[in-house]
Image 1 (cartoon, helix red, strand yellow):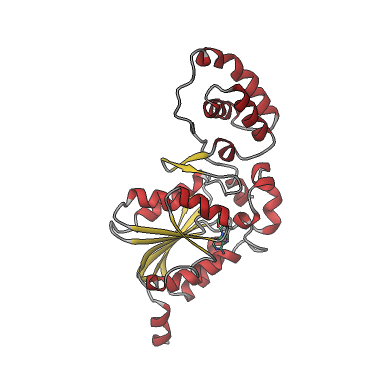
Image 2 (cartoon, rainbow, N blue to C red):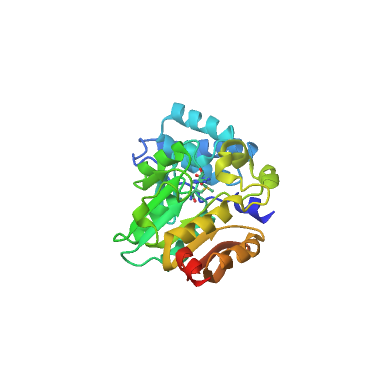
Length: 293
Ligand SMILES: C[S@@+](CC[C@H](N)C(=O)[O-])C[C@H]1O[C@@H](n2cnc3c(N)ncnc32)[C@H](O)[C@@H]1O
């Protein structure tokens, strides 16, 4: 299934440690690499060579630490939890254990979102997780205001470590009232895997990542539909909503988008040709729609 398949891909994390390897480490590395690569491969790591290299660099030549990191990885923990970070849209993002690992596929949403965010605009990233999307937007638009919301306390803490201003709570509910009707851009990589497809996810995700980050309910669009409705209450007229989704979810939310006052709906595909990102412009704010009807 395309939705589950897309969640297998995450950009490999680069080195966490900036310490140079100790003398002799580089020479020994070629030998230890192959044993480590084999061990990781046997444990089911697809990109075993890259992972071995990342784990070695993270350990910085400390063999005891390396063994500890490798055991965690072989036990199925996501690589980013073990190394402590991941590269997302060119930015190093800290990812603490228990927090959803940002996926390379979500860089598409960032690329599209930056086309909609004015230089000094205002953006809200719902379901911000580690804050990866918010960080990428804020760094590309240093004059803009970018904030996030997030339900999970561990993810809130992680996003704050990444420098994101996070409001803790359900979707738009915790945001300050003065933002209502003033936001240029709402982004959301909300959970969108149908409950029945959760079992198809790769082991790292299935066994470790929190269900609240993945489970989109029986039809996959439980959270997404709430995002669409609540974002309409937050955006200014002419503002944009960008969400990540999968499968035929874009078709299934089309009617709701229209009824909520969104127009100019457009989708973009990931590298497999699957629809992955939806953008829509709010042309009529909810209060205006009530007046007009
Ligand atoms: C798929 S993850 C995406 C995280 C981040 N945007 C990223 O791309 O790495 C979804 C995130 O939404 C959070 N979440 C789920 N339901 C939520 C809700 N109703 N309100 C706020 N956050 C929610 C989860 O805790 C999780 O961190």
